[in-house]
Length: 189
Image (cartoon, rainbow, N blue to C red; front, side, top):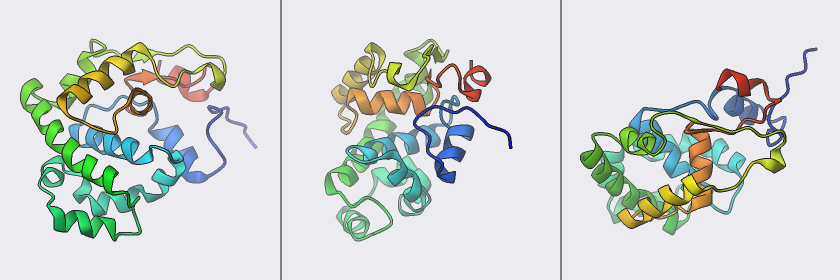
């Protein structure tokens, strides 16, 4: 049996392993995927990421495959439908935030041409390379996440605090925070 060294937050749950090995830290440039991860990171606030991962496929169905145009147009009837959906996290503030954030997301796309251009512009289109030996060395927020969080809030987004945004940056590969001994570290360096 071959032992593969992964980041310390990965459990032996297959969904976590697949997410870590195939997605986490991989640079994302597709606006729909960037929107999906932004909404999911906000939904995760106060919960474990595995909770969200296990609901992600249902989120995709419930939120029209994370079409920001469709989510931005959700009315109170659609919000009530989502609040009754046991397949997602039924928190009114988080659902309202998703709708509002979709509208702001669209405004950012209009201003910058794409959300991708906006987000990756903060790092000159090059992932920030972490250099951590162990999980406990990885920060929960940084100056970069502070700056982006502040800008998103100024534009009207919610559930985009610095800790949530840092987790988002890690997830979409703006930051590579795989620990140095993880097999994905050099693959994404």
